[in-house]
Length: 139
Image (cartoon, rainbow, N blue to C red):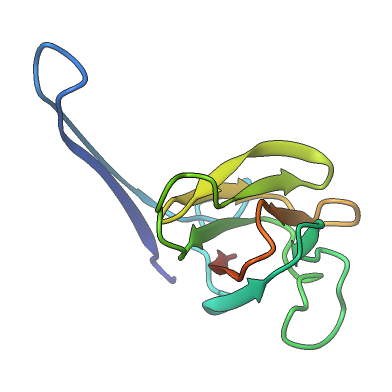
């Protein structure tokens, strides 16, 4: 059985009167059972200079390196590799047509994803200068 774990740690926050430290680790499993994920798309990188929607994960694709049709359930990692600078260069993240949030330079997201027709993961950069993202799906 494959074992892939993800860990997040929030430490030394001074947003409250007392310092806070939170750490959590989980084993990534297939949907609906305790079987560990066994596959990955591998770490990919995309650079775009378009301010139009870009399909990052095409759940209907059937061939090539971007094929995602086999992913029925997975965990997605996406990171905006651009420098934070002044906060104006970000990508808006969509699950099909629903806006999920923004990833500013250096920001990342890790979330569950159910693939299938009409369930693409899309991005929309805020700038026409190059925007580079890394991404990976564990499934």
